[in-house]
Length: 229
Image (cartoon, rainbow, N blue to C red):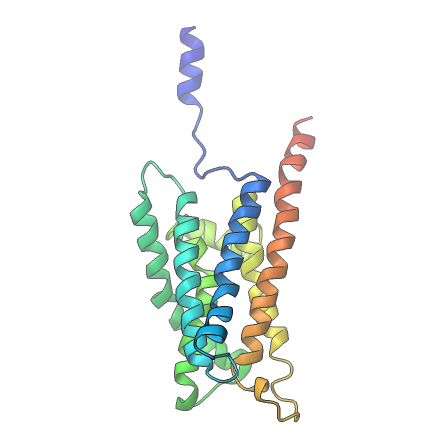
């Protein structure tokens, strides 16, 4: 009996909360709703769209999505005994201004966006992309460079929670990049302006990749069972 108690004490507790496929589906459903709902609200209540007023629409989208992401993913924070829920919320909030410094040069390199007339749009777009890409990771992992490097530099997520963070983040980037293709074409359409088609592409890429991440979440425990057998 004493030996069993000692073994139980020695067993390490999981660093993060385990995520079942139904829970992963619920998380993505809530986050997806937080992304799409502001588009409907701005259109129906304020008669605003990304085409008519991209800055105001983007501002509402990233504010709502950031709040949803932080509140949801902070509950999956790493080492919950050492990191409280309010602290995880604070880490998610701090991710926004830190990441803006990197998103601004990225927008210039990827989409050739230069000029003060695009400054407000670019800042709101940077905050929008941060809410999709980095806020969940910051809320869960904080400043753990090992976890950030594994997911974003090496693209090697480990476990259901990391699949839920890593795959949609990459999907948003790929969707934004694909959405930028029509920008230089001489079609003279209003939706070709920065950052309209890029934003729509990022939204579609994020939503599609959440479905893909659910497939990895379902397959992950099965793969571990096969290894155990």
